[in-house]
Length: 262
Image 1 (cartoon, rainbow, N blue to C red):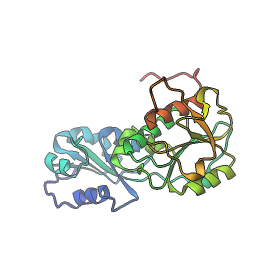
Image 2: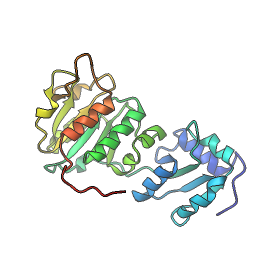
Image 3: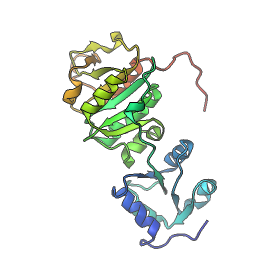
Image 4: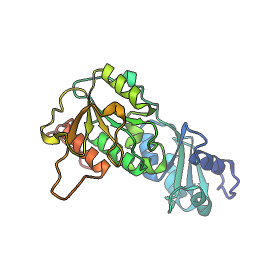
């Protein structure tokens, strides 16, 4: 491992700061060992791993897969976007974007379409649930939270590095392309939709989830609505919770399959 970085003006620290500030949209900042391992597991090539000096020995396991540099702890904390730095930061390329025209409408295909969700933590949680529920892809409509910020990536527990994702597409374009590819499209409805437990989830399906207030773009308002029945006095669910329940209601995961013990 090369000499420890001890200057705030070091080029690698400046690069991390620039990427974190959005000056390189093709590169991600990964904070924490879990995300670094997830990125490597997804086959992404890390540009560099920076590790706080006290953790340098732990980071040696990555040395054969990425350049690793030790950094003074206070300097690494300075470029972290988190309140408490995890002591490890990496740069890696964004996963290859999904092209909607390439989506295959297989009989069990399930696409989560997120439109207008502003909280990146909610978006990350939905991506995590989508992967767990057997979704084949995630589509994030423009003008919502980015899936590539630290909060969304950490909230997804690595799912955003694995689940094919199309980000920044126009709602009209997305609905037209999904329809042309053979996907039946449904929308989450706070009320007035078909009850989720009796809805028809068969065939290739695109499930649209609106903003935290339930608002959906005009392109999705005519789709069949599906509603989660809540107890009296409860108006609605958190958007990520609602998305999770609907994704699992779609039944893309075989409940009888064996689960590996960890």
